[in-house]
Image 1 (tube, protein in one colour):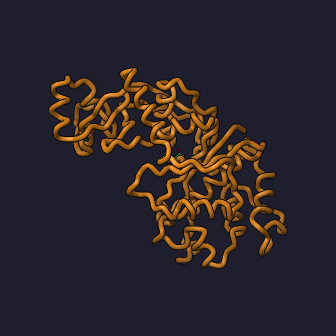
Image 2 (tube, helix red, strand yellow):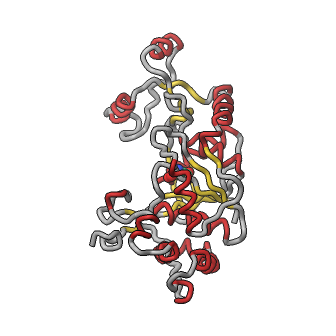
Image 3 (tube, protein in one colour):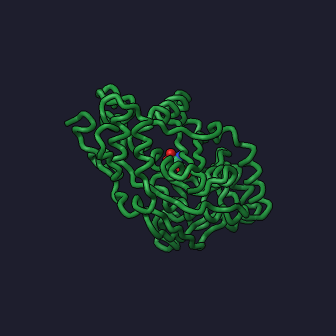
Length: 319
Ligand code: GLU
């Protein structure tokens, strides 16, 4: 299996769902000895909590999920994104958009909008330079890539076929920060990532990202596995308030990293049936070796849960 990666945002401790995605990404890469990289998606300065560069790395290591090469931080890559954005501008593939979020929302939901819902209707795509200058006085521009009407699809190892009709999406936010899609494509291409594993809330993003690969003449990944999320008992994304959701919480709850790993593996159908690998105090790496041995991408794709996994209240210490 080709080079893989896990790309968390250091905004908090990793929770059970994040750790499960990391485990699956690691398994896809390592089961045939491929490279596995860790990258911090830390461009949203306001959301980043610097201590979590450390806690996230520690928690991954505690489970035995080691990576190759130094960890990449997107915040160190600004010069690369600037260069990539300049290439898109040179090819006239991007344009400034002065719309506020509200304007985008309202335009997208207008009765005559081409796609009711969330599509950006191209309001700023054809502004003349006088109007641009005028609007620039009111609000700094974001940059959008011209993609409206393009249809792109991926064939995902777990979620199957997804096709999306695209709109002109943001590649640079109006505070100058590179947008998620631009940064991910740049970094994945630069690192030679060939197989992308991440949460299945990003399936449609993969279709958008294909347009960026094409526009930049870059090689897209060969494959994707968008994995089902782990949700709280109330169906919402896991958060602190739901109880014992992080590795640290689980430890306070009396569990070892090995116990947590056994739980994660069982939740994706890789239950060690051999008691000795799960016995008290067995280090996580022993169990991880077993899981790696048991992991077969073909079988996993057939048996993987396609629905989000709902955690039980009593598991989270609220029962
Ligand atoms: N940073 C994203 C997350 O934490 C993952 C993005 C990606 O893997 O492309 O959900």
